Image 1: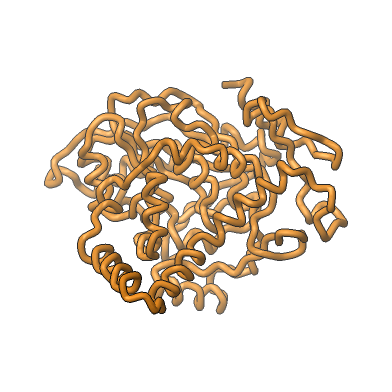
Image 2: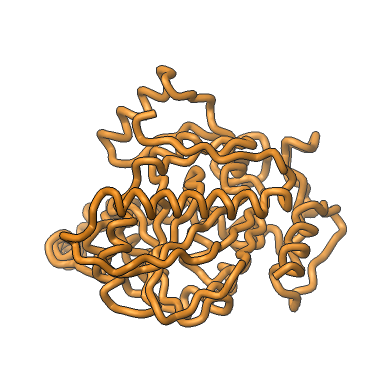
Length: 379
């Protein structure tokens, strides 16, 4: 474990010159070299001699961004088709999707061959993303993983736990994990099928219960801060986590006797620059209003472009180091025996464990004075 952390720290502090190449047979933890962020250079445009492997890494991020819009565009074309067979077929598909489709609430359609594609290794190498195992997770129980922080779009959660880009199945064998996301993502035609093949499911109580009822090893990953926490995703030494009043996952864990696992990603908040929106400001009030109306947040952020580094929707090439903490065992209780005092007790234990995980590894990522601030939805 110590050697893995040292390797990740070294890769997060080296810079790549234009003439460097990468050996294709090396593993992810030893092959990734970090390029300086655009803010640390005077360069505005990407150099013409950018190596091919870096171009393919960027391609994976571009596809990630445009895929939902591509599926929406295809849907509009099908709706406007002059071929009645195509049009009626698509209407039938939409009807089935709205009225009869159940797999987003019933464990998804996870395909390991799809999750193991080399494409996802390229995706992880873009940043790079590293998954750090701090202890074994026995497969004789179920787990509820809590991911922090949310960031703008939780790219670390997606890469680490919806793909095998960082070798989750190798590090945590026999843990059948499902990453849960907003239900609205499954309302886009065909895009929901793509997400389900990666093992994503919607973040509903029905979905959580269905997966955990399957027994040992079957586990869920929740990005607990949710949409509201995305509005606090700023590059900073203070991580603001919306967790103080989010206790539903504790009750679900007690009902199923599932252990809680805190997960923290250093670098998740550093991928984009967000327009200043302090709590209480008019911009934050407007964003909160939109969040209530739409069901998801609308952070106003700036990343980099495809051929230039000044602005755009692509994330910066900044390392993400994800640490999976030690499990917190919960008793299995009947619903009528679960009191608010019991929930508060284990919620505090979880927050203490998350803080300890953060404090243990923060010096490895350049800021020994970094802190966590826990807030609730109304702060």
